[in-house]
Image 1 (cartoon, rainbow, N blue to C red):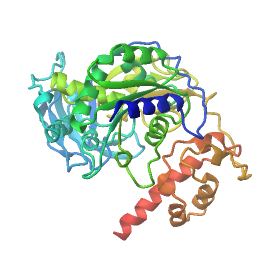
Image 2 (cartoon, rainbow, N blue to C red):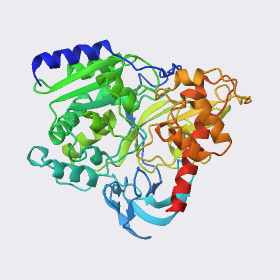
Image 3 (cartoon, helix red, strand yellow):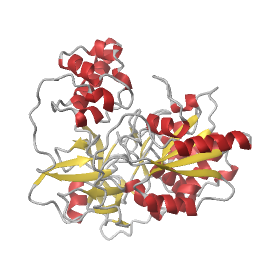
Image 4 (cartoon, one colour):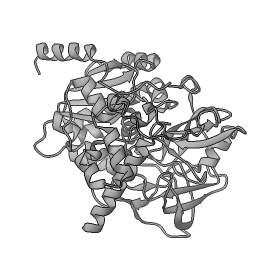
Length: 454
């Protein structure tokens, strides 16, 4: 790319700092935004579901009674869009059973009782030299390390490192927006580990064969912007771009629209408009793979909300039960009403605190009755607020009416599958209609019908 064209693109990026539509919920990040990351002690037991990522669940490798060390593979990838699961602590497999999953269902999981008094040091590993690896070898190393998107979707990261054949990727877009209220996981990673983020960017740029990267960070994180800007490598073309604070700025399509001005067509991937988007936490995880050789066995989690006695940003072993994490943070207040995994806009309310932290768990948010006061739903008044809020230009009012009538095929014709369940429509609805939940049911119903027809 010539310098004149690049200068024009940079100017355009700085002029654009947001997208059309969206909402402005209170960010309520003050509870943990200034709290440094610390490591929580290992619990007595971990529970590792085989379904922790998009795509096919991992295939079991261990049996009851097996002893595993920290970092050992307990389940292998079952296909390309799949990743292995590793033991996050040394111990003995005591059971393989159905266990409560954070998505509200149950899933096959491996229960491991930890070794008493173990230092929990992973086995020594060979650290891959990324500079000498081909793109395919880097992709294989990232897959074997079990790295997935740590922003919540948990899409296998290695798949993004290998764009579809014939598609030209020219930009790596690093997602540091973290627009969900309460969550500060990515914020603290950018503040405390900016060099690791830049190292991960270097590896991704090498693998994708791109010359340019942009890190998008919302303006309510000035310390993160400063840390990333101060540590930018002199030999890489990396831009740190402050973004307007708006929800859902961190959604892939919204971020691409903001930074590049391009719109991802319906049914297409970001790579089809020359961009690969990767969460900042996932990029830091890639860096760890090539710094230590260790797989993804722990992650940073924001434990926050008015119902949590001592909010914190914690490094938590994957598989730790929610109740153990909350107990370490001083427990819950008496007026606790809900525990949400993820942010309050897109997160899932938890019916069982035995559900474990999984790879995609960004936060554990405790809400009181003041934040979750039940509100009666009324008939739609066709005010149009949901149309003005929808960032992907759908008609939520129409989709909601079709969902209530069970007309799933008509919902698909009205582009239901383009909905990312961000919750903007539900947030602005004066009739308190649970639109996002209706759309989630509609998507589930469509998938079920297609499976039955196959």
